[in-house]
Length: 184
Image (cartoon, helix red, strand yellow):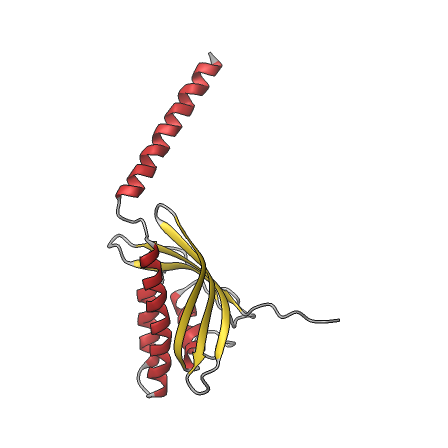
């Protein structure tokens, strides 16, 4: 009797989970590698645009707010953001904290990463993992200093989801400078 009940519960769970998997696949929220790469390009272009607005004395803070609102999933739920140059407050849980990192503002240690300015951002994906309703990309990205032309290599992991309208948004952003070996 217990075995029959256990089998019934198992069949029910498999049926429900299979239905959820099918619903996710049919919802149109499955991301493609092309969409992830397009989102990366859009993010890089936005970082360059913020720095350019700053250099040209335009309203770069408003632009940064629009960029974070447009590209990150703060309006959809939780975003995990660990910026490269952050130590006192290493995680940015709100839109205003993310904006602060890019252009300075509410967090004292922030000096405006996007204000460098940069004239290019280039992604080199180590890999992209596509799931039913999300994607994760990991690799190196390179920021080209607009004044010197020198590239800075940064390691990243980004997570992506789609909102109800099908727009790709960042819900995970972790970046760090590469490890430097210290000889003893």
